[in-house]
Structure formats: C-alpha cells, structure tokens
Length: 102
Image (cartoon, rainbow, N blue to C red; front, side, top):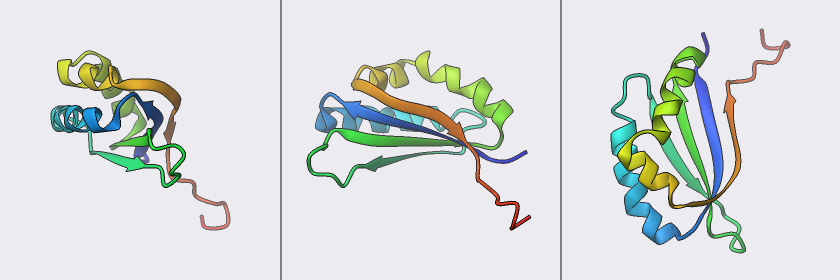
C-alpha cells in the first residue's frame, strides 16, 4: 500500500510562541509507531505570516487512520492544537501516478 501524507494548512495564533510547543509535540508524536515524519512549512506570503503547513507521513492509509486520532489525545500535541487559530484544510494524500507513467 502507498505511503500516506496528511497535510494541514493552519493559521497560528502566535507563531513565535507556537514554535517551542510544536517542537515538543513533534518529538512526542514522531515517537509513535507508524509516524514516519512531521515537517513544517511556512508561507512565503508576507501578508500571511501566521500560515503554516504541517505535513505528516505514514507508511499506509490503515496506519494513518489508526495513529492520527492520537494527535488530539496526547498532552503535548493537544498543547500544539491550542495554538491554532484556524484549520484552513486537512486531508490525506498519496502520490499521484499518471496512467501514462504506469
């Protein structure tokens, strides 16, 4: 089964304050079995400095569906969620393979 990437685009309340909280949450969450990675991207738009993309990877969809709910249950990840002003979008993705490349 294909690797799953879960992408959340988030508007943070206070990015500077959220930084240390995110790092503690990242360290905790990536220790869970089945979490391959957690990367963070920030917008390049100077008019939206509080916009971030949080990107999590899992080995397959089954694992992602099993592990993701734990994010809202763990003390350190809940603290990170409290720093979020708005969830713009969140969705699972897998690599697109064109029928031309198959």
